[in-house]
Length: 389
Ligand SMILES: [Zn+2]
Image 1 (cartoon, rainbow, N blue to C red):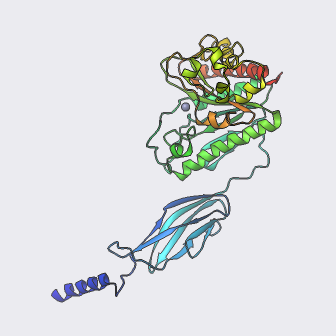
Image 2: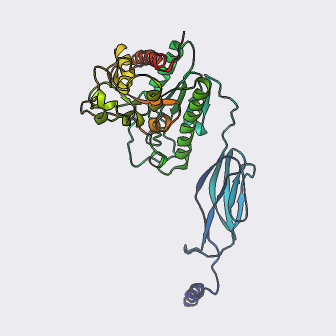
Image 3: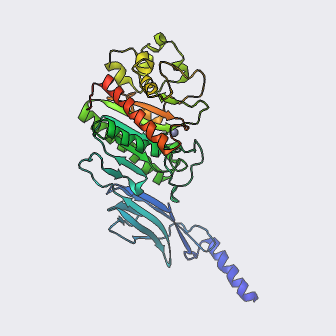
């Protein structure tokens, strides 16, 4: 017994002295999962080799391989190169032991032309794009319900879902087809629950480090960008509508042109100062039409007035020119990015819907969808020079 223990002790001492290295016992590959998008994208995996006690064996030789080289290849340094859509396993072997990581390659299908009325999906169908041909783009970023295990729960920011806004958006689409002479709006929907992705934030807060959520975020904004380009090409200008649901105490629709409640509390004369249209998501419209900015925002032909005409209480509008100190959503990341604030010919408005009577039942969603479609049609005909049968 004593001899045996001494031998082990001696072996350990020898190891600590570095004269006789311990054999590799574990290999850890990092990261443990990786998504590569686009063929030819490269990424270098790292391997850490340890002995049985968990001490890193520096300079240990590692042999890299992939299970399916048709998906991705890997070189002697651990650098993988994406080849085709699929999943494979990356393996790093040291002596008799090895460690693995999951590698996914996703190469979006190349689309020569988006056909109006046809649906296109991003990876795992987290993001849906129904292509259109009208000068109208509608998005819904907060109505999704999917909570895939591969995307961790977001830990900060707003997590509450805008319930029924995905269904409302689909009803709005149906009504637009009905009221725009059969034309189709472009529609972009995030099907992920807001606990997994908030596409109405910049990518860091939106995806919170999940590469799968980041991919969905990119797809969401890319589809909107594709739709905007199509609208600009086909029609010269148009409107982007970002649909949301709010739970503010006063049940009314809120229109966000990037003007805050305090901006809107100013008089019409003050609101007509150049800085307000310049900071708004309808900057292109304000430059183009022969109306004062206050008239565009809350005059008799404003979107708020047209919605009131459909018996939908709306702020800002001639009757409710400003939120009067109550909570109000002035427009978020998507309206900022995809409206005409930074140029371009597509204006933007964030439309925040209350629940009761609007999105709470199928009947109410359909009724509201008809009202919004008619109001949008009048708005586009009045200010954008379009006409539909
Ligand atoms: Zn929202």
